[in-house]
Picture 1 (cartoon, rainbow, N blue to C red):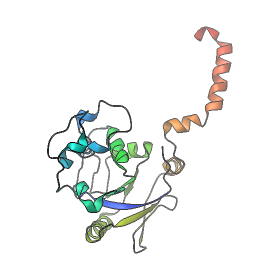
Picture 2: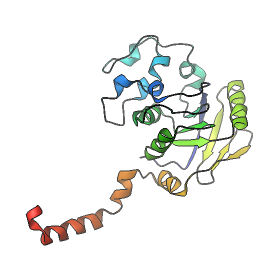
Picture 3: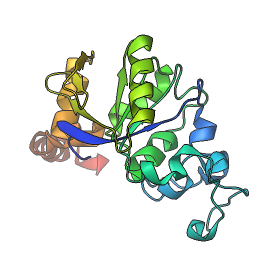
Picture 4: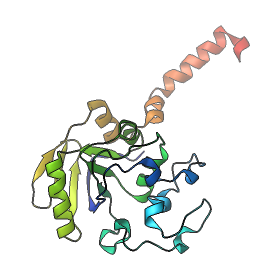
Length: 211
């Protein structure tokens, strides 16, 4: 998992409340358990004019020119600005995988669905909850200025605008530690690899019939 320390990126505004996980990544793409390859199908039903299926060459599909992710001004956006209850719906981790595979490093919204919020931290995506009035301001500024960028400073827990205005956000200290150090659940476990190997060696001597 890539560490998240300080990130500056173009903001893409998704002005829809209650964006659910089926909208983020439709059900037909959930057969794969790999964490990569979902970027082209992020927001699939909104992004393309015709239905998609696994195995298609998505580069040849007709784009919905009105959908915000397809607007040239938001090319290479890496911060997504959303509305309340972002990530509601099912518990699929694929929703987070699709966002990160597309290149989104952080989602900023007034509120998040709990399961999506928890899945984000486990997969290197930083969800930031800010007051609704702040979100309104960020929507206005993003839409008014092409190439609008925000800086997300995780160690200092701040979102910084181009004018230097800062907004503090809350994050659990353990989750912050994991993101800053690029540690998912597997990475956390592997920090104790020597102790695990030592335990297995002792166990094999004590109970060889188990091996």
